[in-house]
Image 1 (spheres, rainbow, N blue to C red):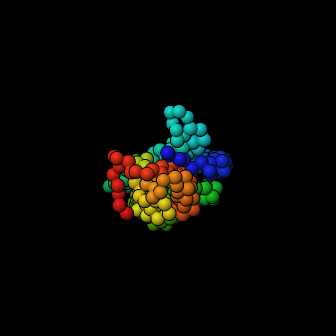
Image 2 (cartoon, rainbow, N blue to C red):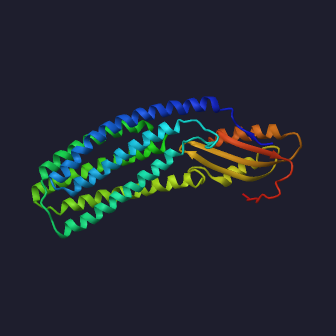
Image 3 (tube, helix red, strand yellow):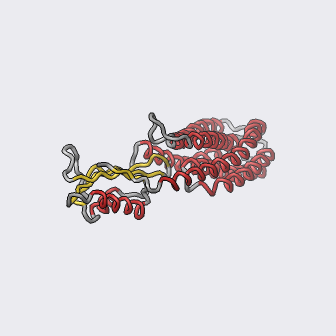
Length: 307
């Protein structure tokens, strides 16, 4: 008979609620900071005719969108499971992170196209105004990064927002350097070059984020876990004669699940073996949600995978 490990559920849900509340506060503060400055940056980009500022504003726009979507994801993620969505709504967070990554790709493509045009047909740039806006953007980004830093390792969505603010901070540094170079040399081609450099800097990190979110959506084995190692560990538990139908996946960033069928060496030992496997998965692999089915004979339709 299948048994599900619920021994950690009480404290675990309390932890999720506490974390979600903290995440909401972080996201709201960061949103107020970046959202209030976005308008200044967009107006400044067009007023001072700076593509680098526009590139930086594009990233700040994705910051704001990321924070808005992340806030929505946290609130929706708190909704309990129901008869239609038995795992709840926590995967909304993953969808939001994937959307943010795709938005960054779209902004980068626009910047590349515009930069090519600017390099062919140089335009004048108001370097002092460009410098002033970039310094303001740097200060706002540093404040937002400080706010988000505490939650970036516990939530993929917070990490996505932190990544975008971090990239935007580097973008502000690039714009400041570009503005100074233009101011003292008159080399206006530096502006589109800085814009392209900002886009190229963030793209590899964006790809990593997108790859992580796709892995969760495809119910792949979470990073840091090795399925053959987990299979060997279960097979090594006393009383286990065989292991099959082992699945390990994540429903959200920090919520790993495992289901497995185990063949018993001796009748009547199913509950004891199940508890040993459950405790081992929690202690060794930090898997607290496990469904373990002990059985005397292997399922007829299973396809064994040897370690």
